[in-house]
Amino acid sequence: MSELTPESSPDFSADFSHAPILDPSFQPVETTNMPTVPTPQRWSFGTRLAFRFSFCYLMIYALGCANATVWEVIPFHIGEHIEEWLAWPFFHGAQWLGDHYFHLTGVGAKLHGTGSGDTILNWIAVGIMLVVAILATVIWTAFAELRAPARRSLAYPRLFFWFRLTLRLTLGVAMIGYGLAKLFPLQMGPPSLAVLNEPLGNTSPMTMLWTLIGLNPVYEMVCGAAEITAGILILFRRTGLLGELLTAFLTTNIVLYNFCYDVPVKIYAAHLVLMSIALIVPDMPALYNFFFLHRPGKPIDGWVKPARRYGLRIETICVVVVLLLAVLPEVFGLRKGYAEQLASQRNPPPITGQWHLVSATKPFLTGDGVPLADIFFEPSGRVMFRSSDTVLWRGGYHPDDKKHTIQLFVGGHDGPPPVYALTKPDPTHMILTPTGNDAKDNGTLTLVRVPLPSHYPLQDRGFHFVNEWGLER
Image (cartoon, rainbow, N blue to C red; front, side, top):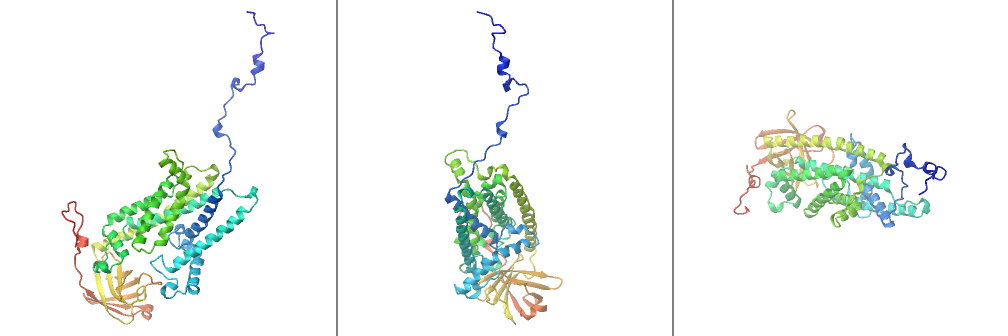
C-alpha cells in the first residue's frame, strides 16, 4: 500500500469547510416555527348558500326577536331599547299586514302586553323575518357569485366566527336565565289555591304541566341546574360543543312540552333548537368520526388560527361581560325573590285565600277584557284572578302595610297597576277603593272570603319508598 503524501491526499478541509454540521455555532432550524403559506379555505356553493341564509335569518331573529337576547347584558335598559328598535319594523309590519291583508280583529289585531310569545302577530313577524332573510340571501349570493373569480369570496371564516359567537352568547343568556328561574324555583311556583280548588277537567294542559313541575321543587331545581350547566358550557370554546349538544337536548325537550301541553312559547323555544343545531352542524364530521368510525375528531372551536387571536380576546371580553352584567344581577334578583316567597309561605299574609267579588262600581277587567269574579291571594305571595267566564289569569300585587294600600295587576295589561286603599270591616269582607288618579278609571271592589280546605292530598302525599298499591283518587 502506498503512502499518501500531502500533495496526493484529498483536501477535506477545502471540500467540506462549508458544511453547517462542522460549524460549532450552527443551530438547527425548528420547522415548527417556520412560516407556512396559508392555503385558501374553500366552501362549496351549497355551503356558502346555506351559511348566508342561516346568518341572515338567525341573526335577525337573535338580535330582534323581542325576547331573551344578548342585548340583556347592556345595563340601564339601553339593551332593551336597542332590541325594541331592531324588532320595531318586524312587529309593526306584522300589525300593518294583519290589519290590511289578514283583516284581524279583536285583541290579536294590536300589539299588546301578553304572556304569550305565539300571538298571531308574532307568527306574522317571524314570517316577515323569513322573507327578509331570503331576499338578503338572494342579493348577497348574486353580488358574491357574480364577482370576478380573483375577487370572489370562497369562504367566510371571520364572519363564521362572529356568527357562532353571537349564537353562543344568545343561547348562553337564554339557558342561564331559564335555568336560574328554575334553580330558584320561581318559574313554576307551588300549586296555586285557584288550581287546587278548580275541577281537574277545567284546568288547561299548561296549568297541569306547571302544577306538576311546581309540586316538587327538587325536580324543577335539577332541570334548572342542567340548563345553567348547558348555558355556561356553551359560552367557552373548549366546552362549546358539549354545551351545544346539551342545549339541543334540553331545548328539544322544552319544545315537546310547549307543543304537547300548549305552552305559548313555541316560536322562541323552536328557534333555540334551530340555533343549537346551527352550531352543531359544522361539527358533524368530527362527531361522526369519533362516535361511528372511532377516529379522532377535532371540533370547529378546538383550534383557532393565530390571525384570529384579536377576535378571541374580544370573545373573552364578551363572555365576561355576559357573566357579570347578565348572570350575576339575575342571580341576586332571583335569590331575593325566592327568599321572599319562602318567607311568605312560612307566614302567609292575612288576606291569603279566595275572595269572591260581590259588587264593583266599575268592572275590574282581566286579560281578555272579561270582568273579574274571584281573586286568589296565594301563600307564595302571588295572585290568580278568575274571570266571570271561569278562566284563570296570572297576576300580582304589591301591598304597602304602612299606607294600607295594595296594587293589583293582571297579566296582559299594560301601564302602571292601579292602587287601592284596603279596608277590612271584618275577617270575611274586604273593600278595595281606588286612590288618586286611579279613581277615574277604576271602581270600588267589595269582596267576601270563600272558605277553603286547610289541607290538600296533592300537597300532603309526599314521597314513599314502599307502595303496596298506587294511590289513585
